[in-house]
Amino acid sequence: MRALSKLAILCTISAAAHGESLSELQARIDQSATAFRGMTAKLRRISYTAVIKDTSEEQGTIAIKAAKPKEMQVRVDFTSPDVKSWAFRGRKAELFIPKINTVQEYDLGKHGKLLDQFLLLGFGTMVKDLQKSYNLKLAGEESLGGTKTSKLELIPKSEEARTHLQKVEIWFPLSAGNPIQQKFYLGSGDYMLVTYQDTKIDPNLPDTAVRLALPANVKREYPQK
Image (cartoon, rainbow, N blue to C red; front, top):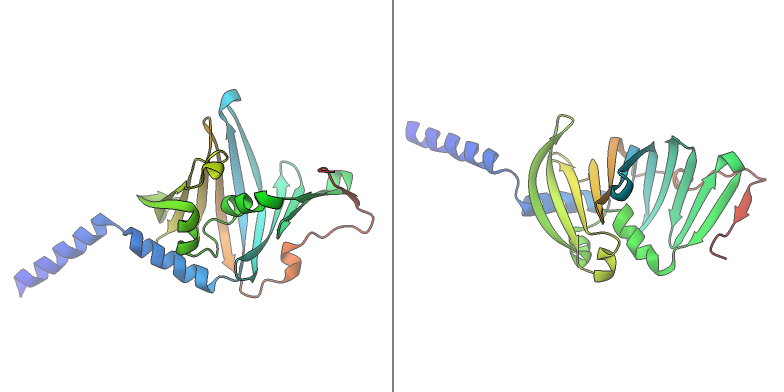
């Protein structure tokens, strides 16, 4: 009995040291994606431009709503350093700049698919859908702010996508299937690091949470025309 107990302890220690497998992480991602209907979180985005060695930081909030299968609506409200709001719905994007009381509307067209790859990685997306666009690889475990995570590495399969995005790293808590951090490698040494805090999964997120609240006298512009 003692020999069996020692063997069980050794197996447990070995499994803990080995960490989570890719299939285990994928199962957790799928479980969260299946149940995903909406979420809100605090957002911090750090952008680094290598050629001028410049780092900028923006902070705000994000709301994502699954309006229907494979159709996400997103709103990002930046509060620092500049106040502005983005809303994404279908292939349309709107940018509201309160300082000049103007909303700019953009038709994303064929680039909408690229937007999905940048903006929605890890939220409500099944592994089989990720695998259509990326090669997936487990990159080990890390601790972020005291939270143990598994890091997933994604390499775009499309040559077109790789001209905009060389690689993505996503950190998933060991206890959840939605990310707390994403890092986008944009080429030439540039990157964008996005961190999520106080994430709240909300299956009843209202439509107003993902739509811009615009003044009646707002000026509307179409920069593409």
